[in-house]
Length: 626
Ligand SMILES: Cc1cc2nc3c(=O)[nH]c(=O)nc-3n(C[C@H](O)[C@H](O)[C@H](O)COP(=O)(O)OP(=O)(O)OC[C@H]3O[C@@H](n4cnc5c(N)ncnc54)[C@H](O)[C@@H]3O)c2cc1C
Image 1 (cartoon, rainbow, N blue to C red):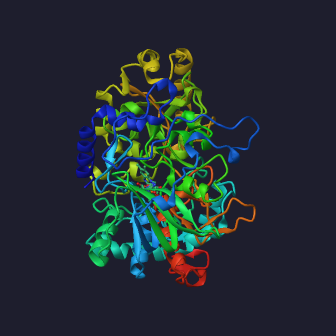
Image 2 (cartoon, rainbow, N blue to C red):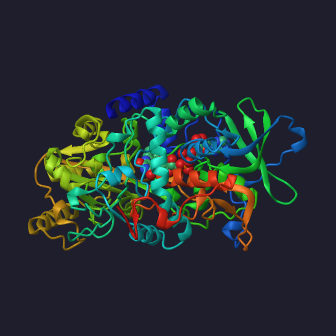
Image 3 (cartoon, rainbow, N blue to C red):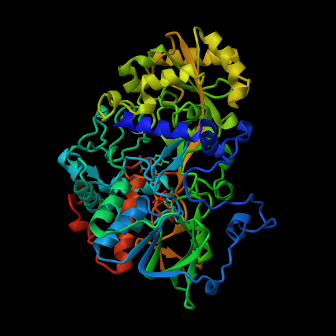
């Protein structure tokens, strides 16, 4: 299935034309890479164009009070807009969070409209065209699949990890609610998938037996060097399905529901008492239309992966992301609409899902990222110095790179990369799927397509990965090709050779005196040919927007933080669940969060009861899901 999907993705990529696709992807490229957002449009309804922003505020104005070009509130003459529709609930955005919300609303018998700025075909994510659904590791707190596989999860630990990685800048009521409802929402979703015809009885759950974690997969500290940075999504893969797509098909089959495509929400409508009662939207032909929601309006518009100006404002290190892989068409519209309606936007700096192993050249060669660059080989910076424990998660690697010279690094490896046992012990920085001796996936060799030896060979052939017979020659190549990759030519050759020698000594000793890397991942760089590949830090999605409470009601900017009547936010446009960085230290995924918050909002807007009493939560035994 992976192969088929990759083939499909590749075809879409080629159809788009490599250069256009890469430019779209590399819109966030560093200045030194000199790439700009693609001028060519992907196959979507016209996305909101953000003008080049210059801060309009003078000095000493709080960021929150500054108004940049892209956030100037548009004015509409409501009376001049003659077309209108009234429904009980208006959901803006129909992908992960939106489609789950819509489905729950339909099941409850509500009259709902789902507005979607894209068309029904595809969306460019990174250099590759996906459908609306991206990602596959759902990361609910628990579900029947995990239960049937005998996995147990420590609940207080998940919550505390989530809070800790966010430096406590989160609402614990919201996190607890999402955790408590995880099994219910996950099983509800699996039921819909089953009705849709998907094989939900043979899903795998991502646990970590290579670290002997079963039966408590959140317990991540066993060997020296394995401190904390492991991602444990209790996810499952539905490659064939695209969950959001399946939900849409089921919604059509069961309820006759149709997404209202190519309709971009522009601005919320409030009544005299400040309640949000609807939204002004624009159709593909430019016609404006008012959609009223008698019970409420739900923002499900995702992040602002495609809005560089907003990134400049809210992401402190926006200039250091070499690639943004998320949807170029997600431009932060929900954040803006909420802001104009008086919502409290999350304080700077915002949250992103940082990614590593990124390079524009690799995307040009047809891969989202360089799998081998993310395995825990030896990492050196532009000058040839080792600078980190290589055995970390995606966010950990990405963030560590971002403060190095040029915000880039080299992964140094050797011919042993072809040995599956070594590859396994080197793990990979994201989800253990990269080393799938323990987890067979339904794909070629059971390995993530980006992480196969074939992918590495492709990237060697494409000149993205440098290859030499000796370490001296490799250093010369790095110096020669460095400027082309934006990492400069200042590699200190003797220093680099000394770094490799030191690293090899540590490997011989079996203990990393310098950075405390897990001994199982210490492999000498001593088997020619030798390889070097340059990568940088990127991100997939942004995860900050307007603050909500645990009922998903949008909170006001006013210090009272009273909810804005009639307005809800879910998924990545809703703040308060993650802060600073995606919660890679827990098993709570962003997809699971989006689905759960969509489910919550559907119930809240209709005033339906939600059974989230911890004592009645399925599979829950005090602080353990089992
Ligand atoms: C390559 C990639 C892989 C990922 N893998 C994983 C993974 O394995 N596990 C995980 O947990 N997370 C993963 N993620 C993150 C995850 O996909 C997102 O966090 C999640 O899909 C966000 O859901 P959402 O509903 O908030 O936004 P989205 O799913 O992006 O939905 C937003 C929708 O709103 C529409 N929209 C936006 N503005 C408007 C407007 N003005 N009017 C009408 N419609 C509008 C958009 O077109 C879009 O359809 C991945 C992300 C990427 C890019």
